[in-house]
Length: 134
Image (cartoon, rainbow, N blue to C red; front, top):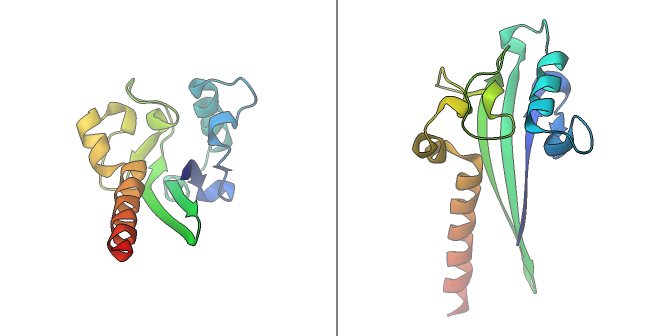
């Protein structure tokens, strides 16, 4: 089983995608990545700042090839806000919220997590595989 997660920004043609962790260059920090995101979107109106975190998990083995996907849609704001979380959390506001992921409690963040959703889907896939074996 393997997974990968990325941030896809519509205005940036899906960038940074799976390169999100090192988008600002090798050895970059989370802040470097957020700063680059804000520079790339400087002057871009709110309606064109749509983004989504996407996590894909793949289960591969003998006669098995299954994937699950979790997605969290939102938009990139104009300035960083919040101190909790990591990565792009300070610049990402999920749909239906007015706070960034970095301003959310860990409990609330986990309820909408793209990774959490992908894991839940994969658990169901594995349960179905196990049922089929018996």
